[in-house]
Length: 284
Length: 234
Image (cartoon, rainbow over the protein chains, first blue to last red):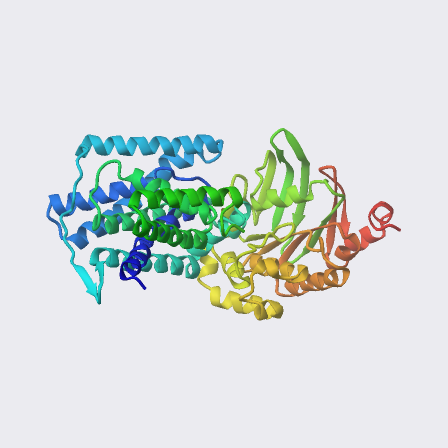
């Protein structure tokens, strides 16, 4: 096999890791709360700024900056639910979308106010690993590993804990959760916090590879949505797999042509699939 | 143990219950019978907290339950087996049971609770890893009852446990009710199958169009003309 193609496949896999993590977070929140957080990618942006601020500006060690950022974005998730989602839970879906859309603009504008529109880099240089003739970015490998760890942790949480089981249950029959002794509001809050934590973890992993600026959410936000819709909105496993499908298309497409055209290819395929099977590949 | 006094309730501008009063003493099995749309399910939902009271009083062991949300009423010791089972279809049997023990006082004893429920319903133990949506009707009813029992209730509310089940399975379900009673639980059953339910309860109420029309021991009701004509086809 052509060595550059192999590299593209591997890179596609590694890129898919973080995308999958974000898809898991978005699907988790949608499956439970039944509201799509349009501003989800911008929570990631906030987390990236958190890592930049604490590490590059204040000089904290990287692991500490990341740990605090994850907790901070989880807290941000709680705040988003309490202040923005909870009031519109019973409103028309369009109003819910507008509310989270408004949050998107708010976060981006606020970040611009605080940091300006420059691209900031956290200044961490990780090596390139050489495996035979294949060059792999260590940052990307680390991000993939951590994303996978995050996904496994999420799986264990959902499968083995009471709260996790309640989260799985509420998306199947919301009304009778009260009869189980479960306060729906608690589940919504926990889910929002976990979704925020996943965004925070993704932020740390992305900060290792990319510069942060207020509008970075726009670069992968739409992609995450498409991945979730492709996999069946609310379907955690579907989103996970769809993330790797899309990332492979982008990576291999980029190998055969250019990066821009590879995105065009990915999105075209998405449109075609939506025409053929609008509920998503893995929808029940 | 449970007392409803002049309870009125409904949905928005639609009133389903009008000044309903009933009592359930500890250790009893009480039935509520009546036609479709009489308000039997609404009454169950008022007791378990899914539907708010519009008027009247509701007490458990002399403590008022008015205004309590459903998840708090479970903590007070009332468990509701909903109409149509309402299991979580894509969770396993065991996960369905475990979620029934969500409240702290049940969680602390979950191992014992699971053992007890599996002992009562051996088929559930065999199928513990099976997805609840793939169970047969009778097995689903067992799972739904088991799930309610996981919260260690004092009072078990059962909403039409025989609905949608084959006659042989219906007999098995009512046999289960006897077994649950033998474990010391108090049971309030809403049923359309009048003949069968009057065999397992001590007393019963007739609910028609949101009002209590008749009340008495199951022996009395079995010999009542109205009941025999309208509900037992005799």
